[in-house]
Length: 125
Image 1 (tube, rainbow, N blue to C red):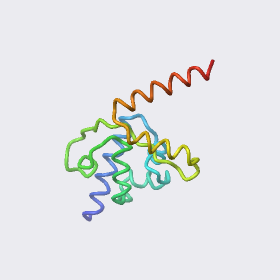
Image 2 (cartoon, rainbow, N blue to C red):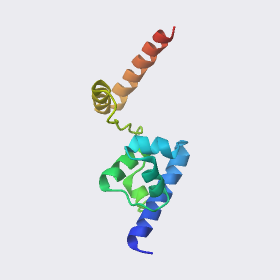
Image 3 (cartoon, rainbow, N blue to C red):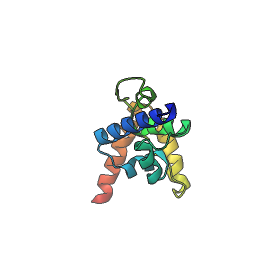
Image 4 (cartoon, rainbow, N blue to C red):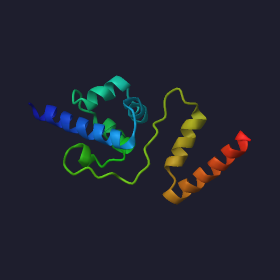
């Protein structure tokens, strides 16, 4: 087995474990990372080694340190919310909103979430 095959297997096993821990499907993770579901599936099976950009997005989507995915550290979850990657078909206003939300600190984000939940509650009445 080559070094790349070993690394692909390591990344795949760590991604699969993190996905299961979060209760996500492969499709959920693929959408959050911004890749096709079949590509993510091959990655999880150790058939594909992600690019650096995809590895970063995968870390953010699964709340993992890159060292964990690369097999350099034990499975320690980061205290970050999973990233939602905007899709090309999303309207520009939604993409702008996602960028603005990502720039907020934890307390600010918590406040925005409370406001949105309150507004949604009013809309449902």
